[in-house]
Length: 179
Image (cartoon, rainbow, N blue to C red; front, side):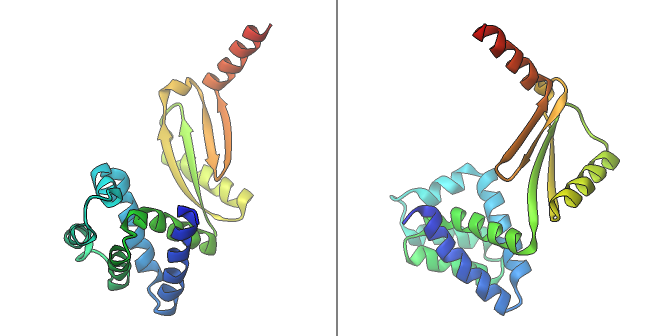
């Protein structure tokens, strides 16, 4: 079974149990925090994936970092996975849980990369427009990339819309090279 399949097999029952105990929001925030911590600290992710480091050592690291910050149900997941020698999958399980949560709550993550800084009103209008078009709540992440020269890049799930000047120039260059 693929790692994503295994991650889903852990994430789904945790989600069901969290809903049953009315802890869904807390567990969601906990696992989102864990995933963000792994994204921010590549050393933690590397330690969890390292097969040379024993499970009890990894659990003690997780204990020191998260036990006081996360719900008991979330920490029990960490503990269970360490006992089953699956701590290398914790990041994937966290991402799978967040994806399941977002699907259930109809939340769509959207990345919007602009060539210049956008004001708050423009961001609100963009978010409202996207929510109207998708029928979902939009979790909008706005980034600035001056290399786009002008325009924007919009990423919604597997869809990427590139309306940047940089992309248009690359297409023109490619046409010239093909001629």
